[in-house]
Length: 353
Image (cartoon, rainbow, N blue to C red):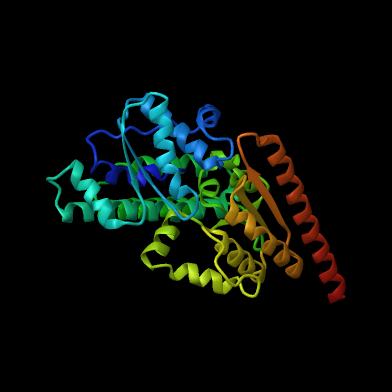
């Protein structure tokens, strides 16, 4: 899922001596996953299954999965049975938000580990992913305005390489300071009031760029300041705050929403309501096909769009989704936002006259 594997490598090392990172996701990954998945399963299931097959083919013999919140919480057992049925021999660990169980699983594989060592490693992973999220946020907001095309992406790759070599929190902080300085020095030509678009929806298709056809880059190409709020950092922050942020999003969703609708559905509604109040130009809502929490959110998003006159475009992804179709709709959405901006400017000019 995105580049988060770099953050979680230290934790994975507690389970085993050798970490096998599956190859980058490609169309082949999805084809493998779709071949062995139930037709009704959502696309994160298919991508994960494809990842597992490619990892097992590369020599892995232990798979670790985390997550929950919707049907995804039950997928691990199903995926395990599918992989066993098609002939793979491996061990499988499924971790939810049960920290005691996670500690027991780690100690089962490495009894010599002290709890101090486990805690230090967990903190190293947490600090790594916080840095990744902070750097990616800067890139999203400025990528569309770089004067030398490709400068952000080239620098980001160097950053990930150095971050992967960090061995403690001090080294992570040093890496962050170094690259924050480098990113600030990248020459950009950004207007004082750029078109601002926020991307909301289901966490996997938000954070795995291949699954949404690199929608954030497509927006940036058109000179849009892109905002995304769902990150692994934000999810862990909510977990460690015992759901405080989930309650906050439900409060932000009033009067459209009174009760939680599952997974990140309530956050999508709460975010959209707040974004509309903050004067964003548009919102993009993305989800896997058949994702019930986000399907439930869509009717409330329609009402927000109508009440605040804020354009919202909806994308639903599955193995049959056309990349060309997504790009065409993004282009049309951008044209609509530009025309809306221009018409407002003309109206304000006439009003001043």
